Every structure is written in C-alpha cells, then in structure tokens.
Length: 167
Image (cartoon, rainbow, N blue to C red):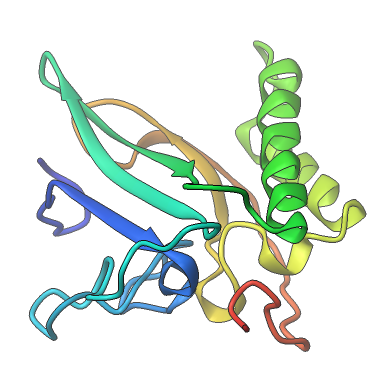
C-alpha cells in the first residue's frame, strides 16, 4: 500500500480505553501498541465484556485500498457509549443525506463538526485533544487516504477531560 510513508498491518483491535490512548500519529484511534517498534494499536490488555471493541483495518479490492473501522461489544455497552454510538450513526446518516453533487467536502466537514458540537460531542469528535484529526473522511483509491478529503479549518478547545478514557 502507499500512503504518507505508512506500512499497513493487518488490523488494529482495541478494547476499552486503549483506543483513545494517543499514539505517535495524529489519528482518532491510537493505542499504545505492543512494543515501541509498533507503537500504535491494541496492547496486551484483554477483551472484556460490556466494553467497546473497535477493529480498524485496511481493505484492498482489485488494486484499490482504503480502511474501515467497526465497533462491537460482547454483552451490553454502558449508556454513555450507546448514546455516543447512536450519535456516530446520526452523523453517518446526515453525511449520506447531505452530500450531493456540487457541495464542497469542506462544507460537509463543517456541518458535521457543527452537529457534533450541537449534540455535545464536539470535543471528542474524530479524536480528542491534540490527536483530534482535522478531517471527517477520505476517498478510496490507490492510497490508503485518497482524495477527496472532507476537511475544513477548525479551532479546537481541549479544556475538559475525556470521559470515555476515565474509569
């Protein structure tokens, strides 16, 4: 694969707070990894019941590549995670309905960030703090993060702690 001097591993699997542990890259998912040589992705923690399990993996079909992230749970998610997950579906549905020919990718990003702030998730939308990425999504193609990229200038405030990392 090609893309920003990266090499693709098969997948990252996170359970619980390791998904929000910052890594050396500016990504919404980081993780401590298993060694300084691979300092991104899940660690040696175990997959537990009632905690979000996030799988982020690369896909390639007929020479085209992209990545995909899915969230699972064994048991039931606590209410705060169910609400956050419902919000992500709301953003996905909003994007699918809003994106039309002639609309700018930057406007799609701006509208989604606005929705995140209206719903109380702006501080955690697409990462947290310095690891909050400044784009909503990207296309698929010959590189892992292909154009077009849905991005716009954003100013971020990181005054409070992320409740999804604690406890």
